[in-house]
Length: 202
Picture 1: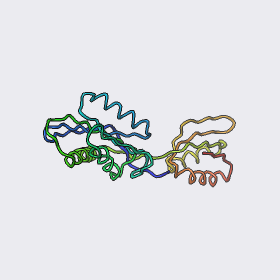
Picture 2: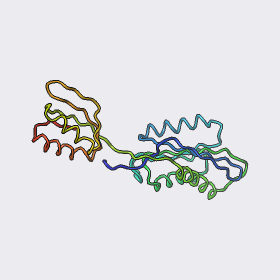
Picture 3: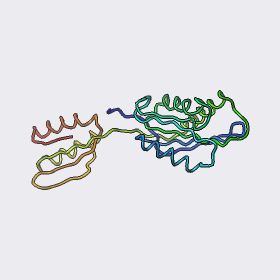
Picture 4: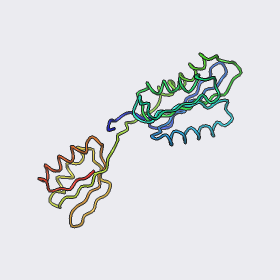
């Protein structure tokens, strides 16, 4: 999967009170299921005295359903986790987990009210969430002779290639990191520039 997509740039939290119940929504970037579960655990520990810590996560590109999860954490079935996940699924974000912490205020909201409170909490958090672009990258090993160093170094920025390590020995070896979709294009450009006198593997 080489597409770029927006993800949360930082942990983000909002809070609102609905009929005396306090709802705290925390959102974070979670690129793996393990990261999502770890984050959920952190929030549960932080708000261990809360009535509920309901959660939902989506790992992968926006709208994907291959790595998802959600929980009502003791709220009536279908009133928290699923509505929260639905908001994440249609948010245009990838690799995102939301936890909504509830401190019960004594007034029951009813099933419909609960569903709205939990989904609105996530929506409210996403409205002010700072985001960044996730760019899938690949590593490339490039070996050239010294005569090609300057033109190759001029070429790299156009393909968003970053030099991770460089080794000047008999030949010059660069360990590059660049966006997945740029790798075939850079490979082609390197062959053209050096007239085939390059070793480039990714």
